[in-house]
Every structure is written in C-alpha cells, then in structure tokens.
Length: 578
Image 1 (cartoon, helix red, strand yellow):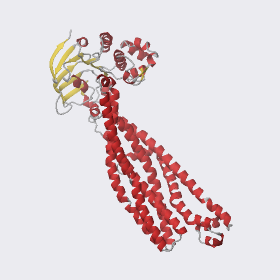
Image 2 (cartoon, one colour; image 1 turned 90 degrees about the vertical axis):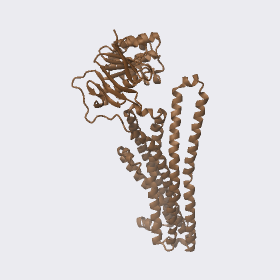
Image 3 (cartoon, one colour; image 1 turned 60 degrees about the vertical axis):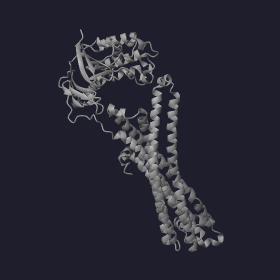
Image 4 (cartoon, one colour; image 1 turned 180 degrees about the vertical axis):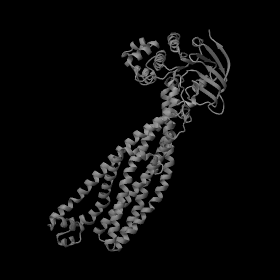
C-alpha cells in the first residue's frame, strides 16, 4: 500500500463520493456477512418448522424481536415476515454493492483525469533530451494504458478493501457470538484457523505475478512504440519494401505480450483454487467436529454459511493483492515520468534585463550530448538586429549551437547569454518569449490554419493574423483553400505542401514578433519556386530582429550580414556579406 500512498491525494476532490462508497460498502457487508448467516440461523428453521414443533419457536431471536415490536402474532404472520427477511437483506446488499462500486468508479475516473493531466504536464516540462530516451509510442502507452491500469486497480481494490474485510468481520463476529451463546459449537471455530493458511499461497502467487506484470507492461509499451514508428513512416516502409519485416517485428512483440499475459492470467487464476481447496478442508473439519458434538443440521447451516462467508473475502482480498502487484508495474512506468529529473531546472533567483537588448553571446562554449563534445570553445557575438548564418557539413555542431539559445540543452562549459544575462538565469518561459523559431520541417498541429498561426500570439485579432499571413506570403494560398483561414489541417500539416507549411510557420513567427529569430534550414527542402517565395518572406521577417540561421544553400546566406563556418564543433572561418 505504501507505493499507492502518494496517489491518495487524487481522491481529495472526490472525498465525499469516496465516503459514500465506504458507507454503501459497509451496508453491503452487513447484509452479507451478518444478514445471511442470521437467516440460516433463525429464519429458515422458523419457516420450515412443522406445526407440531411450534414450541420450538421459543428462544428464536427473530421471533422474540418481531413479537417485541408487534406483540403476539399468529404463526402464519410470523412466517410471512420471516419470508420477507431475505428480500430485505438482498435489497440492502444490492443497493450497497451498486452504490459502493458506482461511487468508487466515479472517484477512479476523476483520479485518472488528474493523474493523466499531471503526467502530461510533466512531459511538457521535461527537457528535449528526455525524449531521446523513449519512443513516443511507449510514452503514449504509459500516459494512456498504464494510467488506466492504475485507475482500474485502485477503483476495484478500494471497493473490495471496504466490502470484503467488513464482510469477513461480520461473519467472524457471528461465529464468535454463536460459539459463546450455543453449547457444542465452540469446537467448530477451530476451522477458522485455516483462514490464515490461505495467506501463504496468496503471497507466493502475488510475488510471481508482480514480476510478470512488469514484463507485460514493458512489452505493451514496446509494441505501442513500434506501431507509432511504423505509422509515422509509411513512405519509407513502402520504398524499401519493409512491409513483411515490420509485420514480423509486430508479430514477435504480440507473441511476447501473449506470453506474459498468459503468465499473468495463470497466476491470477491460481488464487481461487488455492483458497477454495484450503476452505473446503476447513469446512470438512467443521462438519466432522459438528457431527461429533451432535450439532443439528439447522444449527450447522448458519455456521457453515458463516464459514463460507469468511473464506470468500479472503479469496477476494488475495485477488486484490495481485491487482496491487499489477498496479505497481504501472506505477513504476508512470513514475519514470513523474519523478524524472528536470536537468534544466529553473533558476532559484531568476534575472531579467531592465532594458532588453536582443544581442546573443557565446563565451567559450563547450557542449556534448554525452562524454564526447560536439562544440568546443565557441566564442561568438551576435549584435542586436544582426543576421548571422551558420554553415558547414552536417554533424559539425550548427544545430547544437542553435539549440543552446532557447535553452533546450545546457552548455557543458562556458555560457550563452541573451541581453547580457546567462540563459540559465532567465526563467525558461520568459527566455523563450523573446525567441521565434522556424525549422526545416515545421510542425503544424491538428486544427485550422488560423489556430496554427495563433500559436505565435494567442488572443490576436483576425486583422493581426491576416497581416502576419500577408507578410509571410501565405494570405493568397490560404484564401484559395475551401474554408480559408478556417480550413482544417491534417496531422503534421500533411494536407498542405511543404512550401505552404513553411509559410504558415513563418506567419506564426511574424505574429509572435519576437526580437530574436532562429531559422533552421528553413528552405532546404523546398523547390526553387517555393524557395523564392519563402526567401522573400524571410527577408521581411529578419528586418529589425537578431537572427541566427542555419544554411546549406548559398541563396539562404544572402540575407545574412555575416557567415560563420563550423566544422567538428569549432569555428574555422568567418566572413562578412556585402
């Protein structure tokens, strides 16, 4: 239970529903654990007594109770009231069970909502480097599948943790009371000693199931990752005829999931036979001892039912233990996200310039993704309003230098400063408010063209959006769409061409109107016609902004005032453009 304690906070907003579930569960337990044995003890003997044995009604607690309320009643009336006992008990049992399960399910879904939100929020705050360690499909499986498993575990377990112990206590209380008040039944209680014996196989099974559940969850994450990977690369799979290879990998992962799923099912289903076998041994001992003590069938019915109602909660509590083990596997995977260390922590005492200057400085900067450095002793000054182009072979360190400015990564040595302040002393949100980025493959989100442009400045007016689109040379092609600015874009912006996608991204940057602009090979994937249109938009975009651009094409460097060549993580040349 200690593993689940940090997640109890999610029940706080629904605590009254939780308490309602507890009360309903206690009603269910009382009607089951005490109500049914009492029926076997007093109700059935009264109903099925012969007329000649009517004197046996004396000493029956039910008869005494009814007559205490209503006075002396005829036998037919007593039998009628007795027959109503079972429907009343099952009514309370059903109502209690329904509301306990429903209210706890309500709590569980609310918990799931908050948990997923917390996990998703943490994913948005983690540094870019975190996403290099996990496949997107695996993270999706954790956010959806593992969170749902944890909800299901807590909801089902919480219901049974209320009802089953209370049912067990009710049944045991009846047995103890019966033993104390009825001669010849105390020896039957020895059969209760078999209840603790049930715990031994349950603990062994739960331990094995926990290990298999962890393997199952990990395999499910791998499968989700492979599915996401294959769906994101349909062209490459077909171009290289990888269909059968992908299917074979999929088949192997599915087989592995089936293997672990069957292991989980095996250990989960072992619980009932193990408990039932021990229970029937205990019941057999009870039958023998009852017969040895000349116990009547009527008296033993109540004892036998109470014993059965003692074993049933133990069996269900054993299943709860296996549920907890499965849930712990989900917790482990979720906590990989929730407890992940944000290596780009916010500064304790953030700084901001009194008067902002868009200059960017690299002072003796070194950087590496691991032990090997990809940037070495970089010194560079980019003055306010200046446009600097970075050129060089792929892998030389241009993108790494680029990514240090918005603090997607932290330097290994030296410092990067914006407006004279180390980027590590800015809050990340304020720093990134000063920067607009246009990449080689910009991301367009599902939604309308208007909504995608609005990401640059949420709340902007329609006029501002249209002016940004005109500046990006995007207005005309947007109006040519069926619904204009309200045209829905498909996932990744695949419903528009590469050049159109770039211009929407540039319009987003125009709307943001940030003083620092980062362009990452913004035209390298375009044809000549599209490039010319985008280049014209970029020429307008960089005016008055401090711009750093990565370029492979000479046409891109024409808009720069300086060109810096980087090779093997070092600046090897610098020239000014006329």
